[in-house]
Length: 307
Image: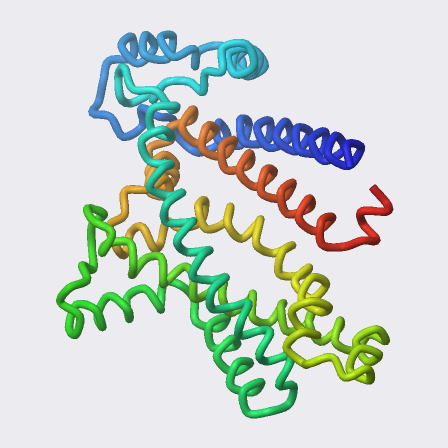
């Protein structure tokens, strides 16, 4: 177990290093500069602004300074276009909102997707199986930017108790969380169904049936642990993806999360903010993958033996 954890940590750190390096040089290859959209300023003022932010130095020097500040001072850098505002402050302010949205969304996905997949597997080739498969395929085919506006219109016209915009009360969390959760519930349903069908066809399951073990007990005590492995492998990256890829949902429902800052930073060429957000998203995905791997090891005896 310790060997696997250390191996995953090393791979994660290497991934983050490559991610930060690529992002650092790519953002500086963007056309223009952070001051492109500013009003016409004298050349000497623009030069002073670049010196103040260290943007006048050669790229290798800037890269070294960024990594030194990142490693030794845990500093992600300031915002170029806003004096006195730092990237860490932006993340600290917006991440709790995105995290809360991600937690509720993955909860909805788990509550809907996993039971639907189990029912579809147990009732294979029956009406319930076909209904679950049809619903899952519909959820996969309909992207969140379609489901979100439809839910907003439905809630705005028929459910006066739900707000279609804002993030001021728990009632405001429902629509964006349902929008994100439904898409992932569809994937979880299909993965759970496939995993359960694979386990239900194993010899030890047939032996249990021959011995007269009740069907519910077979599913819960014997098939569920192995059947959930594909779904567990998906949940970790999906949760990180909900947090990092929810810009469309945040825009539709006016949620003050992290996604809006990423797009605005790209538009404004905020180098340090782009780098900080990419690094933070990468850290989330690496951590989620590690937790997902550990959960798979706990569920799969073969993986535990290999560890």
